[in-house]
Image (tube, rainbow, N blue to C red; front, side):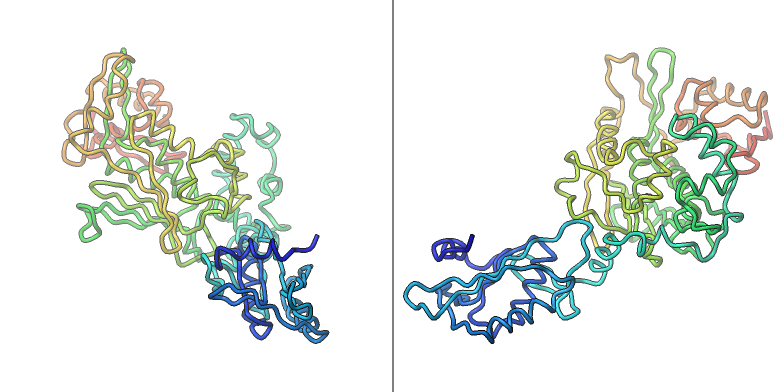
Length: 486
């Protein structure tokens, strides 16, 4: 059904906007096609020729065979090709003159970006702009992930034999224990395990496999994380500044150790069990860091994830973008998952490192609510997605972190870098006894045996190390404890 003159008047009555562009004549057709391309790359819209831009007076113009050929030629320069119906609306008082109207559908997630004469355009409010290169590359990557996705490219610097087989086996074992992998995976050759995860191209590991399981970061500069504890609320002076390297699991571990080192630790006694926890819930911080590692843009090799702790806040900055459907304003609403690196996300899901796709933000908010801590905020700043947690003010720490008094006897102890004398002697004695009995005991096993959290184990063993009572030999996985002075 053709557009009527009345419908045209209603369409243009509110001036040009994000979905409307008017031109006086086809002499401005080239500029009009820039806007048409922008409509195709944004939310769609109308290009109408024969309207005075400022007064919005309907002028119309003479339409000849040459005019129609000119419009068809201009439309043919849009790539990929689009099927656009061109409407010629008669002027009631001038039958030889017509208004030319064309509607362009908007861009959908997964479509290739459109270009006009080889250049992409998009809309910023009512303005047509050339599309930034990173936006164009991202849309191209999403339209053909098998061809362009970084995680799907064969690794240039690693082989299957150079990956950490012990880590792969541990991850598989965790997936079997959680019921997300079949028991057969425990005995499968490593190459088969990686193949079933779609992490190989023939006998070569993909970049996703390297990000997850590499033993040597080598040439991969993006497998680095920046960790800093600043004094005050700006970056003028730092207390601790580190750069750590490793695969996804190692970087997650380093980040959590850094939080435990520099955030306040609190404890409460519920019945006969001591519950110890960070001022900002470890579960929320862990989920945020894991999301950053899972969804970052690894192709941006010159950028790294950054964690900054200030006196008043914690900022976790991830080189990446939010999917078009998600904004900082609506990210807390229920939404589907749009994993930037679906191969990496699938491995983490199959091992229970992430729960349900799309549930990460909800889990972060729920962990904060459970401890009475303010939920974080999300912002996009200079190519980074930044998650900011407010640190509870010192005067409110006891009130915020003491928990629900109805749940049992509650006491709060604050341990910071300055106050370190609140260690529970009975707990440390039990930890030492368990270490003597089994030098290979894990933090999880110590936590279960002592009736405290793994954060509590970390805090107690940290004090024992600082006092030269125990020493750790080897890595966190596979190493053992040595008691120096009982």
